Image (cartoon, one colour):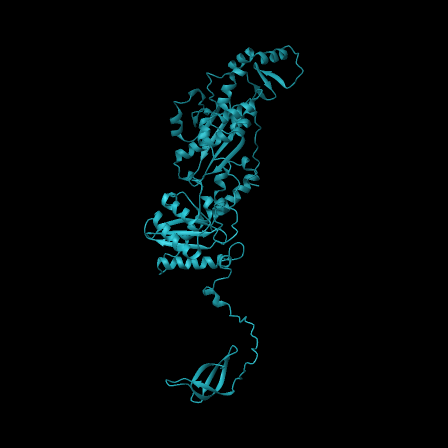
Length: 508
């Protein structure tokens, strides 16, 4: 409700500051006396009997501005019989950066904010601007005419430069003159004066032809109007919105579009065009068909060659203390390829080590198709790039642990290969077609899944049964009496001899 009625409440941003602090992310919610006072003041403001006066274009306008350490505010008003009657209020809170401004800068910001907020009321009109900052009045006293400054009791500035549309070049008289010279518009104007036109859309005001509420601009002045509309280099949409408030001519939308598109300054600073839809790599048919490679580092004076299988996401990492070169990279890749074989394709960025003739020759000799991504678009090699960032983050997180760099990398790889991906299976399961055992597997009881079947003709001994078992000495085995105490599988037993010796023997 407060937000809805904020334009009727003076300096609402400063009043609500203690309450808005409670909404800051990660802040502690603490209802203080300042919060309670702000809440009660807002209730009083909403329920007050303040009466706003309607806007009247025939009456003088006044904008009053002020700034606090937490917000800026402005009030638009008329002066009737020496009494100031508010039309509307406006305010906003300051950003964290703006709260660091000096008081002079905050007061100037309040002026800019208020004029921009009430732009639709003051555009093209003279108005009194009231501020309580003497230095601002001094700064502008030579820039603006002093006949606008009234009431010596307050510090004032003249009306904003938003009305300064190069009055020497574009005036009401100039528009009237050019309208009379325009072959088409002059005929429409004459038919209106003669009462011969039936189209009620067209009217005359001070010699200027209007269509609805918009002035019809003669052809000779259209370029000047386009220049003024595009003075702050707004885009096509904003420029059309502004034009539809004030002026019209045949083909104005097309002229606005051409003006913006041909503006070199806009072209140099405008945002990048919409990104193309994400293109996904084709899924390889087999593991290790396509790999993505990249370097990470330096970290602790070491570099890391990261190789990712595109299908299973299986990762290999090799560490080197030397700065990466084509020859060193080939040596590390040969070590990996000796385990997994040569891939069909290899994706990398355009680093010098990957585009050198030595590296290209290695790929050709190995039957590897080398795919280089487009410069400035690392997302194409996203598999490797993402794992580079992951490795960096995890190595930084493990800096306090008493492990060597190789041990840390080995642990990272171990856990990565065993961790399920979004598909529900781990890289190890996708690449090796089985899950690898890690330390956490001790939490799972071992299951004897073998389907033992009695072997035909095999003797079966019972626990506690007396038997003779071979006892091996330095000479030759001798038979000794003992008792069966435990059975292993189908063919092995623990035998305890009469002399207390226990050993394991096969049924034979």
